[in-house]
Amino acid sequence: MNPATRQLGLEINALLGASRALTERSAAAFHEDLRPAAFHIARWLYAYGPAKPSDVAEAVAMDRSSTSALLKRMASLDLTQSSRTPEDGRSMLVSLTPTGRSQVERALALRQGELEQRVEGWPEADLAALVSLLHRFNRPQQPSDDSNT
Image (cartoon, rainbow, N blue to C red; front, top):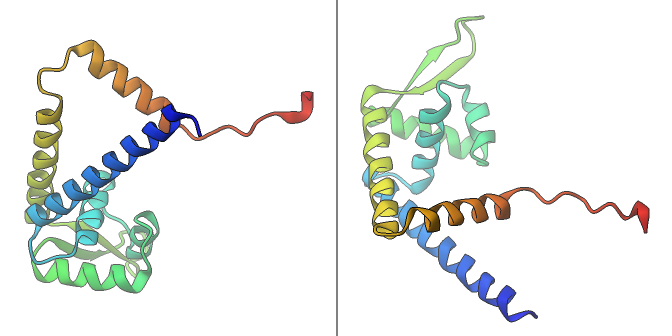
């Protein structure tokens, strides 16, 4: 194995570990009595707005029963609310309450603050280079075209 590739793997593992730890802290800042999965749901609702519970489950890659249970718990804590869809009045939409939005914003501010601390004092060029390289790394790989070989 190429030593640079091995080092890349180590750094990615460190990044993932730091990301998981930050997610745990952010989830606790969102609501200390909820599992981190609730923060994922709330963050998705914050970004995309009201949705059917089944759509939320699919978007956050959770099974419907777990999502439903978390949404009920979040509603009991005044973080989410449900309403009927305007189109047919039968389906339910779940959304964040003002309290839920405020809690997500608080948790996201914590995340942003920690990120800013990590890069404080970095030259703008270094930060831009890191962003560019991460963007390149995170792009889906295109299938190689072996038809010319």
